[in-house]
Image 1 (cartoon, rainbow, N blue to C red):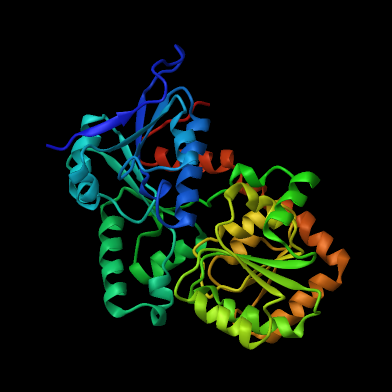
Image 2 (tube, rainbow, N blue to C red):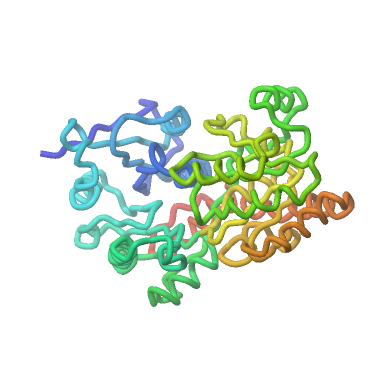
Amino acid sequence: MLRVRMRVAHTYYNVEMRRTNTIGFDAKHATTGDATLCSYALFIIEAMAKACPRRSYFRMYVPDDDTTPEYESLAQRHNVESMEPDGALWRKLWWLWRLYFIGRDLKRGDVELFHSLTEFVPFGLERRGIRSIVTVHSLEFLRLKGLFGPLHSMFRRVVMLSSLRRSDRIVAVSENIKNDLIKYLHIDRDKIDVIYRGCHPRFIHPVSPERQREVEERYHLPKRYMLFVGTHMPRKNLGDLIEIMPKLDRDVELVIVGRATTYTQRIKHRIKSLDLQERVHMLYGVADDDMPAVYAGASLYLMPSLYEGFPPTIIEALTLGVPVIAAKGSSMEEAGGPNSIYVDSNDRDAWERAIKEVLGNEELRNYMISEGRNYVSRFRPEVVAYNIMNCYKRIGVDISEY
């Protein structure tokens, strides 16, 4: 028999709190896996919990109790619970519980709406009267077929289509994703809500000079550097950035922050072959709380990816006053706004010209910083929460407190 263990941080509730709605979240990625999905899950749940403190209850379903400090902090909120399968067997078979058996536990817990923060929706929710929302972050397997095997692409397509058809509504994290859902998977446009992800609060506050110096010393950051943040993978197109470096002034360096993969060795090999070891710096395991200072110290943020669903790093850079140059296509124009600069991902000459233009024109750089900060105000947590509440309303779940 499957049992779910519930961990509640507080045993009392404010007497004014009337729990009229219980929302379940597939929070698997809030504790493990891809860093971008993890930060997205934590951001969304926290934004909703803060926006609806009295009338709603938010229950996070996770594979086990191996969590992070940030997750544990979220679970301490009076209107948030963390739940996981009870027993080692079901924790090992989390995928099976998530696929077929979670619906039974959602029903027992009076969950009215299951909000999946990924592209997957469990089976059996419809017959139990539980409404569902699925989130689509990326369709790279359809847009960049050369980077994925046919079996991988076919499996992703089948799984995604099943979830999209069974869900009551779909959240696309960008207009680009919405258009791709319509074009490649023939999804009804009226079923899709575009809700951008927001910027984590840690990036909103200015970095103090003391904190800036501390982080610069800890990671041996160069005096003048451009920045890239992301996992090392072919679609990030880091190779082209490396190739451009010899054409730039020698005092301009490049800092690459992100998780290493098998692709990392190819990047390192190219750095060495171009004798750039002193100008290209690869950082791993940078603490989340140190990242604002890493951004703030950069002269320029670069995003040369061949494809992005919606890159939060662009928002983070703009929030901290760093101008952005990104690749055309996919969703980077949506994240960077009209006053960032966009060039073809594989046009190295265009990248070189754009970088030199921004670094050599202080007036242009200051304009991009000012307008970028204005643009990213639309990604504040309260704005995102309001848009999600409207999405809930469209399927008959009203949790607003206005």
